[in-house]
Length: 325
Ligand code: UTP
Image (cartoon, rainbow, N blue to C red; front, side, top):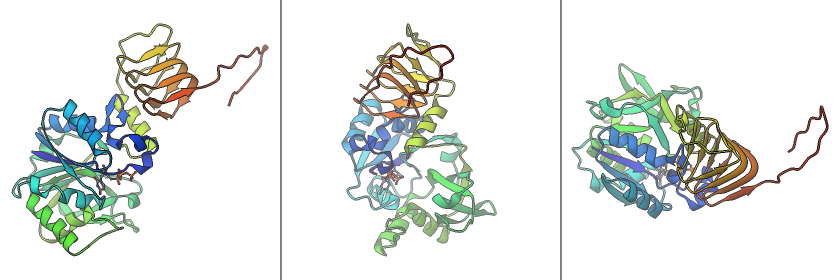
């Protein structure tokens, strides 16, 4: 089974980190976002990944080729014209009669894909959300999807489409995107995958839904940090660091140096980083970073960055209360 992973986007919401790294290579709970996705896909039996690259695409390609041995095909999307367009770029790599799985490059999921990839019908991963206005949603009835609506202004359904798509008939998907492109049908300035799927529904393709409880977005700093926290759950550290307190769950790269520091909970420390005289919780520190004399909370420190604070020397009397900003 082939899986398409579109990762051509610029990741503007994760700047400044995405000025120098593609979003999917940002470290969350000890490995890049795309590493979590690839591991799940391979576990489910996917044997070829078609990766749509654009912005900093060479870095994505180098990392994947170095770390995975399944068949990898890279397709360049020179202009970001939307998800529908991105998928359309893969047309020559997917035989019409084959089924296809698509997963967005910034969605880490926890769902058993086994039954999904064997589904008799096309099926989309959904999750109930309180406010569906930010998502594409599925209106269902009679055991199937009746229609799909991209970012509805009026509440038609609270079943958000979360970025996992199993397409039974690839040929029909590509014909539907052809239809959008030939007729320049854009929504919010982009060729939308949702519009192509809606076109398939209108032409008789049956779509069902499957529930995705574990759906961890990595598109914004706050969601990257909450995903880091969720993925670290139950992670325990066996290595000891003299003079340090480790509050699990944390991920500390094997060769990171930690001195006089409290790490965790919910902290990821990348390779070759040196942390000393610090307190780091609910944060991600990239690789080759230096963090000293500071307390970090809800923070993301990029690769090769240096953060240091002032060690405060104080001489305070009994019953004092001091809050340093
Ligand atoms: P997003 O729009 O959420 O990601 O697209 P982005 O563009 O990287 O991030 P922001 O919005 O600027 O912060 C969801 C996924 O679809 C891919 C993106 O790379 C991302 O993985 N995508 C989107 C493409 O590959 N091509 C496109 O034309 C659009």
